[in-house]
Image (cartoon, rainbow, N blue to C red; front, top):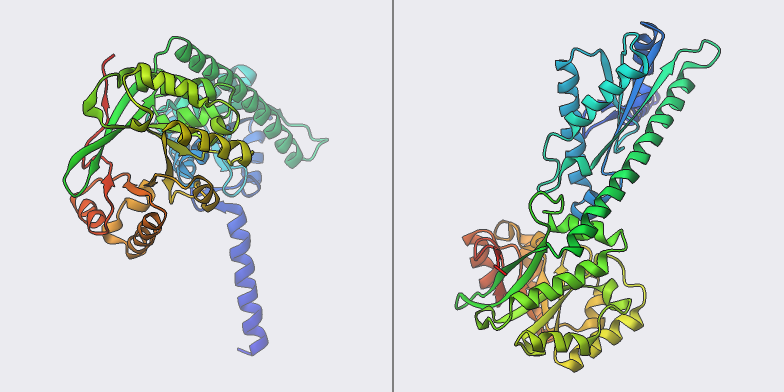
Length: 425
């Protein structure tokens, strides 16, 4: 084979792979819409109609913002598999596809067999029920993460079939978006009711001194009650950040933590979460907080505010002024989730924290991962140089515990050491 022919062969192979990558999604192993248009035409020609159902996973972006894109891919694959199984049980002729590679929009072309809008509505309901059945994210009802819309395509020989399909998909997607807004409004109402009734659940997880295996303090954690749809704490706060309820949620969490820790000397240092947004936007009043702490029988020095950077700091001047005022009042501060990708070096330099909490993503498997081990070793040295104590989060095995302790990390937290416990009121 000549050099020119060999080059042409490899160019053609690369182009074929590139095109295949545009027509098939590796994550779900489904074709994209352009790859199934001919098959959809055959479905439609059976009785002159075609039902198009659009199922969207994580439309508000809460899963991806909280857990990353891998969690969305898993949820999409689970929902899609559940829907396929349900349609096969119902013996419904259908085709499944994604709107595009790595899209969060799952498409179904279904034969309605002359049933029109009524039959399509029945199938839409069956699809919605099937997609909401598997636990897509632990602690979160799937109904809050999945939205479904549908549109009926009636064949019109005057119009190009492909454009008819795309227009029907757009109509179904618009219905799904409206459903998403309705779900968001309903979830907002549920969270508002939960806060108004102060029905948050407060837990305390011990923070352990690793060299002596004694309790140094406790982190106050909050989540919604069982059956509320907000049992998952991460998604509770992510959802609240997207609404006007985040400040009320944080205030309730602080007040409940202090009230339940009242006079309980066994708790040691109390760690309470605080977002940079609340601090920067004037929601923290150090003097008022000092009074609240005093009424709980504690001193400001007994409380550490863990700064969580769920969103970027907008007003650094206001934020650093609040941090300085908290310190002047006697409170201490920690930076949470170091190593998670959220906490920036700028936050570290501006806060100059008393504690650095290493995220579970750094700690998990550190006993088997040389890169994590060396990264934590470097961060421990950095923490010592700025006078901060390190807390390793997410220790879940004896091997991780020994590795962390040998690196000179003084404090630890995780299921291997102690699980969070609900504090009775």
